[in-house]
Image (tube, rainbow, N blue to C red):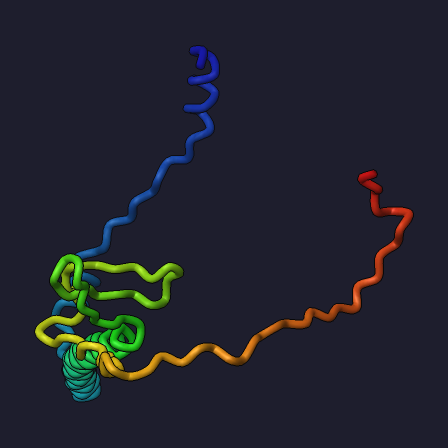
Length: 162
């Protein structure tokens, strides 16, 4: 800004006028005694503040308790869901148990117990084997599949590979 702009800007400022309160008016405000209505209103306000504070305490305690309960329910749900998705099987090559996630394809094996099981463990999958002298049957039924579709092809649009 140039000097002339500063002078113009300074000339447009309005002066603030501050009025001082007279001594008589100030004494009237300080000396005013509270009325019965003022006392009742202030007591009511204090009661309302105390009730609101108590409500907030109870609300905070309820939220904390709800969080604890929901966390426990979530852990229980995760454990039950995990027990449906994992199996425990014996691996004869490594001679130890493996925990197999059956949701994956191919199934994923891990040799350590999943953390979400905690102190619990999965029930070992029971495998039934036929006695060694049990005769093996040959497969007598053959299987086949039929695929049917309703797609139509336009021969002009299909390129010929000949």
